[in-house]
Length: 96
Image 1: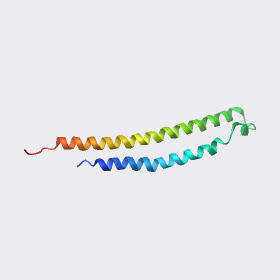
Image 2 (image 1 turned 90 degrees about the horizontal axis):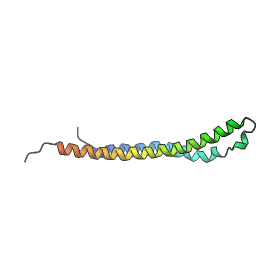
Image 3 (image 1 turned 60 degrees about the vertical axis):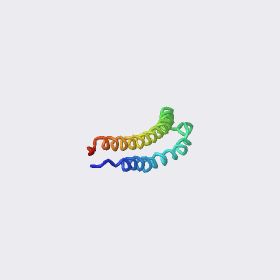
Image 4 (image 1 turned 90 degrees about the vertical axis):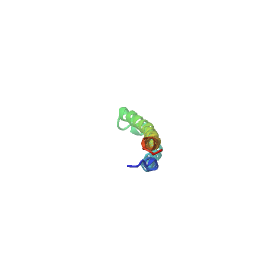
């Protein structure tokens, strides 16, 4: 099987773009969700208000982290493809 580093890199790019779109869409919803403030929860309980705010903050950071992970996966797939092609080239028997 021949090494195809461009296919691996394309896979990483497609993954980052297609999945990253969902993360960005969810991130754009965070300000809307954040608009629900603690004061609106006074009819329920203080603990729920605090938990809600903390969950929103946690999700914002989590979405950023996952987006960075996708970028790293893309980069590493490109590097793996290049290393695979280089290894295959070095291991190919050639006549002198």
